[in-house]
Image (cartoon, rainbow over all chains, first blue to last red; front, side, top):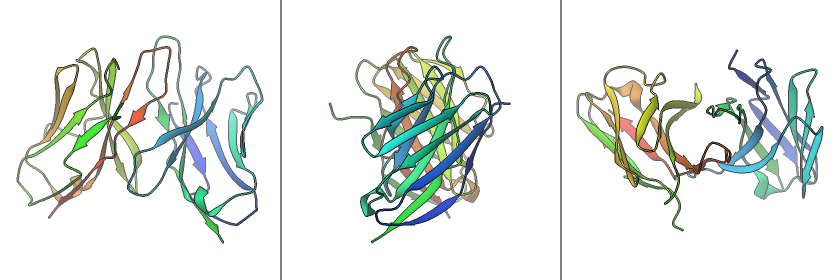
Length: 113
Length: 114
């Protein structure tokens, strides 16, 4: 019940294209859904996060879409750039009464020039 | 702020040796986490501390692994004896408090056990 399932494992997108990464969860108590970005040789860093009271959150070229009834959320990267090439992790947690982040297995994104 | 500091960045050791990984969290952060990252299993939470006290160590793979946090600015993860299957990147992360869930990760320690 604590799992977060992420797909695809890897993704190749042409420069200027849209990258889409999907995650699904089981635990309906989750109320915080962040995405982390990791470059080679670095630790993951928070990219964008959403609470379930909204269905979409946009920051620049990055958008989270959230579907509470389907228990799914996704990351969309518009106008993908080679500099976006990284591993992306979705995660989920319960903010009230602190719980740790449950991470998906990650998606390696390569944006070809 | 220097961010989360981990040392060493790379460690190569032989099977059976003791390995100690070190972490300095961001000053003022109450929570500290140790993760292990492998291609097969992704990011796994090993243990986390709140105010220097271990809260959940259910992710520690076996008794060969131990972690301590003697004070608010230092934590260690020890593997004794090490095995080749322990080869992975180990991350330390910290966060401020329970209402602010952004975790700040260190650069990681790449451990290779031969």
